Length: 178
Image 1 (cartoon, rainbow, N blue to C red):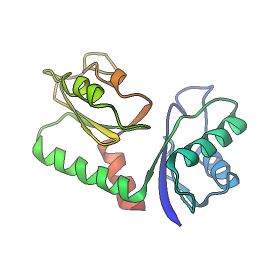
Image 2 (tube, rainbow, N blue to C red):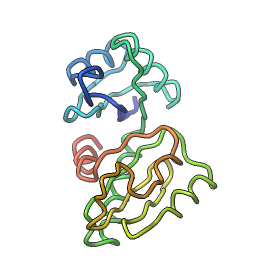
Image 3 (tube, helix red, strand yellow):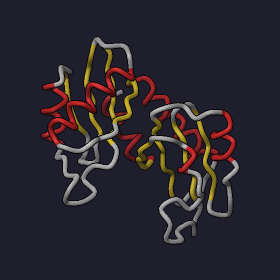
Image 4 (spheres, one colour):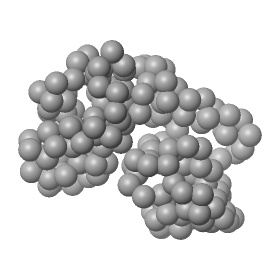
């Protein structure tokens, strides 16, 4: 059995997309996964499975969520080992870039093409930069980056299906589950 961590996109953002963590656990268990646990109420769920195809796992969970909730819940799945690698990269990048105002990790459904990666990394500005490592893109934002925009670098549009978490959440999940 492999341990996986799924990150859910666009839940608990308003009155219509509510998905409490107890319901998330119930639905993931009913979809046939074991050892299900959640971390805070932002759509982070750990489970085990004998399935090996990340894409098939995502499809199965997304179908179960849609059937239960009545709306789509894009789901991005990593092995626990991959999450541990992302957390190690968080620490490495934080060490290399002292004084960041924020460090967000965009968790990607698919690894971006070389062209998309180049566009993302070329979006560096006085607000900060974004570094892509596999299926994770790290937004390293400098003090003063807040200008009222959700994506101050204008790079997220090049990432494809993604959800983000701050570096603290990624580190906590890795410590808890990996």
